[in-house]
Image (cartoon, rainbow, N blue to C red; front, side):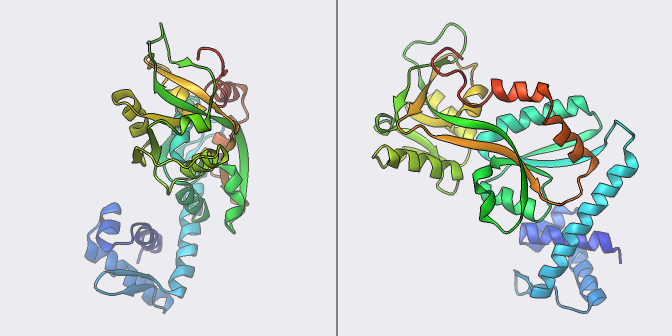
Length: 318
């Protein structure tokens, strides 16, 4: 039995909650995956997987084996990167994820990291806050970009690298297109914005909770005109229709080229949300992760954060 491979199959089963999908993700047949897991059970002398007509879950013993499997796979990746990397030239995969509204910042970070270290292969994923926190907890994510105010919600201890304080904008079609790029207009109160047809993220997203709370702070409750779990859909709905949306500075900066749009800073209340990178505390970093954390401290990256997030120089053209 290949112990490491069997552990990988167990982690995949926990992630996909389905024997067939887990097997497909591991590029093996379903019988091969099932046989490997039964061999793992025989090796440790315990039942790991609760079986019914479909996948039911893991036993208490299975959860303990899963936690060990996650650590083993993480340590194996760290070792491989150490063996393959040369001094000053880290190599290996780096699995990163961001909440949807922070994806522009993470994509920019990944591109700069790849340019700085061509041997690193970043994976850029979109996840909800809960999925980010689970990924850090289970070591299936190396680095997450999200709401650092949520760090206390789980038992897992995290280290954080604050990036920006996000401000919120009402995005709408401009009455007259600007000459070059999206215009930053005059501030608008949340209560006034509540009267407009809005496309918002779905209620399972933390961003939606922030926005709903801001509207309540302005004395309003807003039934959205459109709901979506895609930030791209938020922007396209504004571009294509007669709806508006509420976006943080990082997303507004990503659509600057739309000169027929305008973004109005939202005030009363003045909502500011800290965004940062997070890793699990006490975990030995891989060479790729160490390089990423080092880049966070560089003036070049800090300049990018200041240009493409936060208040965006509210009150003047972007």
